[in-house]
Length: 350
Ligand code: NAD
Ligand code: WQD
Image (cartoon, rainbow, N blue to C red; front, side):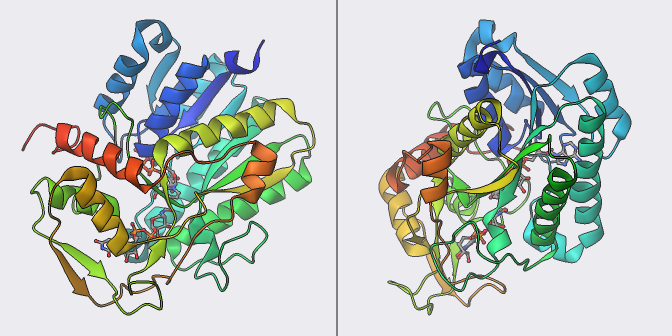
């Protein structure tokens, strides 16, 4: 069997990053099964993935409605199909909601993942790519963030990622036949170049780019810029935005490593561009790409926000042979392409 003929289980594959990664996996020739409970996604995204890859490749895609918290849902899947590896996206990710309802986050993210490890072990599938986050660096004392920095959590969501990294390390240490890659995403934005799939948050967006996008299409009146007195080039906070298609390709690179290298253990990689961009720079880049004015109000800092966070990309470049290709202009171009074609996301106007 060649590398790309393998069968991959993608948890949370109907979601934002999952759907883009599934397109790339199918284009590479992998067979893919998605398990998703549609808590934060819709089957329309999966239908569009099928359209994008065409009828032949979409024969390699199965969708299963299921919840990782129900072990039976996983048992059913693993008893039917021998998976070669799992890419584990499924999880809740809203920081504010996690502060208000930590039990929901611990239940979903921790119990779901522990169930997944149990069933994977039972069926002898011991290769895992896990969605971690730059949130595990907390408010970094130094930048760029390097993988061996001390880790800390700033909120319950971040704590689930930190705990799940520790759990992965413990499992791999106790059972050395596991191979686990922890991918720490920085700030994923943009959309597939077709504009057919993209990010479609429920309710008022928490993150910068979906918020800007909804201002651009007239769903929201103006952007609040949280903080204009940071010690940065223009006073607004700096982040490492990464195109979701680059992120998707990072998962293919991680799989290649899992299938071709022996002594992987459990190891973490940053997936970022290594470039810091301020909120005001992002607004200007989006205005340029869209031709739309984004009314922006300068507001106080948002509690818990760091001044500047960006990745060291050396380890991923060296060990995964992966490097982000796209810059801010392409991220904004593709985000706008998705937004202008789908102003209400996957739904038609309510
Ligand atoms: P998303 O919400 O779009 O996708 C997550 C998917 O998982 C959704 O389709 C949801 O329905 C599904 N899901 C959640 N809980 C489930 C469960 N118990 N069983 C089955 N399915 C379940 O989010 P995303 O932006 O695609 O993020 C994917 C992963 O990447 C998450 O683990 C997230 O924490 C992590 N991450 C995201 C970002 C970001 O900014 N988007 C940054 C760093 C890390
Ligand atoms: C970026 C910048 C805001 C909204 C979060 C999670 C992190 C990871 C990625 C999952 C900040 C500013 C935002 C707005 C604004 N997710 N902003 N107006 O906070 O870097 O990271 O998403 O793992 O864990 O914490 O991303 O997009 O929310 O904010 O001015 O309406 O934009 O203050 O400086 P963040 P973000």
